Image (tube, rainbow, N blue to C red; front, side):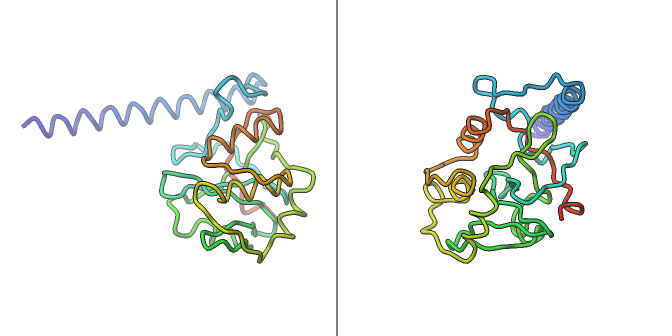
Amino acid sequence: MALPLLWLGGAALGAAFIADAKQKQRQLTLDRRLGRAPKAPEGKRVSPLAPSVLHLGEVKVTPPPGALVCCFVFGVIEHTGIWLGDDTLVELHGSGLIRPVSSKRFLAGRTGSRIFVACDHQHRPLIGESVLARAQQAIYRYRDYDLFDNNCHRFVWYCLTGEELSISSFDKFNRLLASHFAQAIYWDEADIAKGY
């Protein structure tokens, strides 16, 4: 008798959490429209809108060539890459090969069905000066892949800055991006159909 009550209580808490998260996203979307959303990182909160399966996707952004993109890997970690245009992006694969892939291939084998673009508070994609050139030059080269030391975040950071830096987590990646761009990082859903 107690087990079904626990399940019911857990389901109610889960539903309340989801409803609260969606309400916060709606408020953030409104704040961004009205110009009240954080422009700069605020303390530990460098990414007010993180990629999420709960992401409402009310505003979709067309990724220009050189945009920083990500998706989920089994809801535990994020996988990052660089948008090249024409439904193609470059990623560091787990084999160590840097390769161009379609958005469909980027998402294949991962839990997410959406790609997100790193943007500022006004939905403008954040792009570095040489990111596209570095990403294109790296295609079909190999890196000594390591999940915590030489991963996709490190590759994207290299494309953005030309600097090799160990980046062990998506959170650390966001902190570096926020510092580099002097912006709060908003991960808006990509409008892939228009991303040419």
